[in-house]
Image 1 (cartoon, rainbow, N blue to C red):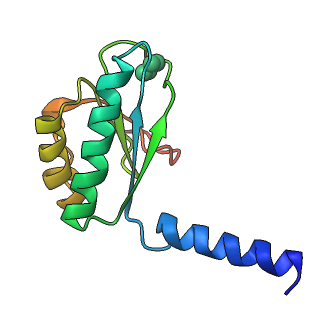
Image 2: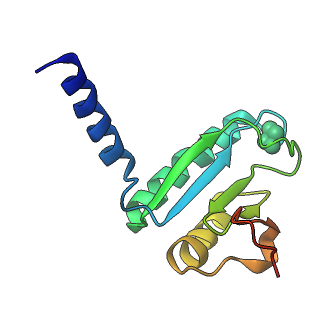
Length: 123
Ligand code: FES
């Protein structure tokens, strides 16, 4: 096996581990430091990972290091809908997970902004 084969094997394994082919949603969580306390964001991040895994949601999750909003966090944005949720907590995440990530219906009263980045104007 050549170096290129090894790289391709690692790439294939990485794509599989990230569950890119099967993902239906992608969640990004801001880890601070300005919109929230990073230590609190880290605790929330562990909770998000645990709850997504337990729920069986086909959702990728990724840490972000500042969305340039820098207040009112921790922020979570859920794609493909592009719904932005601020002041995220464990309890709020449970509702977002159930209704939006699993149920497909964003939690409208908590959606601070929405932009699906698909070039279409939002209603
Ligand atoms: S630190 Fe979270 S948006 Fe800037």
